[in-house]
Amino acid sequence: MLKLEGITKRFPGVVALDGVDFDLLPGEIHVVFGENGAGKSTLVNVIVGKLHPEEGAYTIRDDSALGLSPAETAKRGVSAIYQEFSLAPPLSVFDNLFLGKEQTRWGILLKRQMRERAREVLASIECTVDLDAPVARLSRAEKQQTEIAKALLNESKVLIFDEPTASLTDIEAGKVLNLARSLRDQGVGIIYISHRMREIRELADRVTVLRNGRKVGTLQRDQIDQDILVEMMTGRKMEDLFPLIKANPGESVLKIDGLSTTSGGVRDVSIEVRAGEVVGLAGLVGCGKGRVGRAVFGLEGVTGGSIEVHGEPVVPKSPRQMLDMQVCYLPADRAEEGLCLNRPIHENFNICDLELPSHSSFGLLKRVVLKADAQKSADRLKLNPNNINALTEFLSGGNRQKVLLGRGLTRDIRLFIFDEPTVGVDIGAKAEIYLLIKSLAEDGAAVLLISSDLEEVVHLSHRLYALHDGKVVAKLEGDEKNEERVLQSFFGKKASAPAEAVE
Image (cartoon, rainbow, N blue to C red; front, side):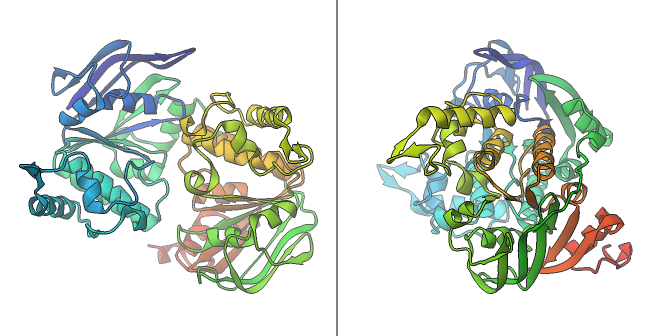
């Protein structure tokens, strides 16, 4: 369906793609796998016509596609669905589907024909979203279905999915995977970018691995193996991913007793986190674990129970109050809740610290000090590219997460609450984030790690609480803290239940 040979794309000081070969067959899901900065986004932008390579050949159905604009590439049947949607929130689903490609006759919109066509396309992907609903009111999964429907209205035969399940619940992600399979069965060629090993194993017909702008190799379906993929992508073996974090528990920093929230998502939860340890809060997406962190940070109302920070009772009312109590919460959705993407990186690093005496006086910001502190954080986190004056929106997902994490390094924080810290992040960036968590805990901070990643939460935490349907169903530590028992608890099984019960 398309073929790239020897594609080379350079930016000032960087070779983003170095002689890369890639091809896509009809009715195939071809996964592109690699660390942030490996060249995946550049490859996608070359395919859709946003970037033009300096060297190499690019054909769509044997016709040269070099130099085509995104609009011309789309006319040839190539469309991309990105993590950040290109929808107009105030407009309806119907208006978004036909925005820029309205059907008219003598200057009059052919609304009936357009609605019939829209219903056909939505039905083809088993989407039941209301055509008249404003996009702003849709769930993330429904927005994604709308984006896919837009592409199919263009009669696209090549679809590019860029981390399509990064911010979805497990149920929503399952629908996306089923949709990808259905489109493949209809003969659509799919380029699928993901860091989730389970998805790759379930979907991929082939996997091409990029590292530092070069193609490392392509694996066929029967060759796909997690350890092999990780080593190809990073040059490191899988067992080197999780660091050993020394436990040195001190005083109680966070104690929650019988917590319930206004949403009803948390019911009678009791946990404790001490200085110098990592405590895991595990469970499937939607089990309520994320709401625990939000309640502690004053982002969700509390209807029952008590919260103590540093041994003192507290009623969290605002993030500012909790920051002053040396608590830092890092949200799961960094784009919506964590970062100002249209502002420079250094401003995002320091946005929570502007009122500190070291950073301002008499209402005037000490910009030199602010930038110096931001640069220290960027250096410590190995930000790539390390240019704190650049806009945050141009960073990869892993580097955006580093900027978010950096906020906790500019204040005296004693409790770090990480909510899904590695969602949408590649293996290499994960390893760096894990080392940061290790350094924080071993320096005496208390860390609450909220995660749906089974391996992550088991390997990093010293003690683990598992949630199901808003309640703690297991407290595991020592030899009891293993993947089998945690997995059982994910589905509401008791930790002592036999493994067959999960089946």
